[in-house]
Image (cartoon, rainbow, N blue to C red):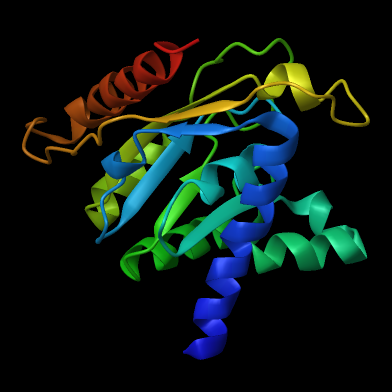
Length: 207
């Protein structure tokens, strides 16, 4: 238990110091992340920083999906696993990643997901994948939309190294999935699209 608590504190303290010093980072609405129960934290994806940024502002045990090719880099693999990452194949349906996600939520953890599926090329939010709603429906997880502002300018996919610049992170109020809102299986996809669009609109509201 001591080692687990130490790991958790280090996993937040080290990046917190870095981002405070180099990017004057501010976290808004962290209290909107439920303290208990399964939670899906769905964020826009605009930089290499994003998983660590979002996780640093959450005072909970977290896991997150990361591009499987990152796990082929020895040092980086160890670092992202330390912060709670598990691999996901982006070019096809990844059953293993789905199982890991379900497992994390059934353990009442906070799961960070970037539902665009890849980093934005222009800093804007693209269409989100419907999987976040399916996961929420299956695990009774609430969805907390998150908006990262400023990270695209500091460390986008087009940069080899980060540059100075302010970063702000906004944790919005959680969205609870109402299982009774759709009457039958034929209405399910429309329901998924409706909730996914709601999440996207909330994320975009701060951009």
